[in-house]
Image 1: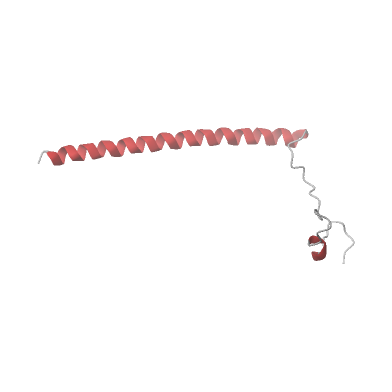
Image 2: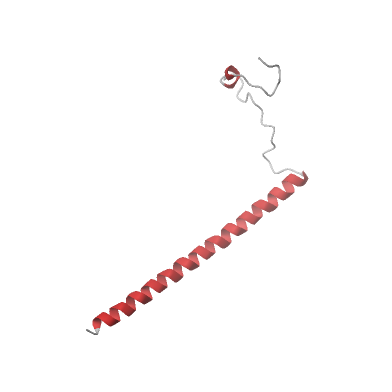
Amino acid sequence: MESNNSYTSWADQWDYSNPDPVPDTKNSSHGGGAKGKYSRKVEDGFGKTKAAASTGVKKVKEGASLGFHWIKDKYQKTTQKR
């Protein structure tokens, strides 16, 4: 077996005496530094994009619904004349 600390054996992975046998080296919080600054900006951008997409989908759905109702009304008017 290797003596490298990054190597975790199968037994170490299933050892319940240590709840986290492989410590997480990434900082999951959006702390300081350039990475945190840019990740917050990216998250804000995704939020704005999601809101814009949601609004656009609602408008398309509403427009399609109005269009189908208009076609339905025109068809009913032409079939009532017969």
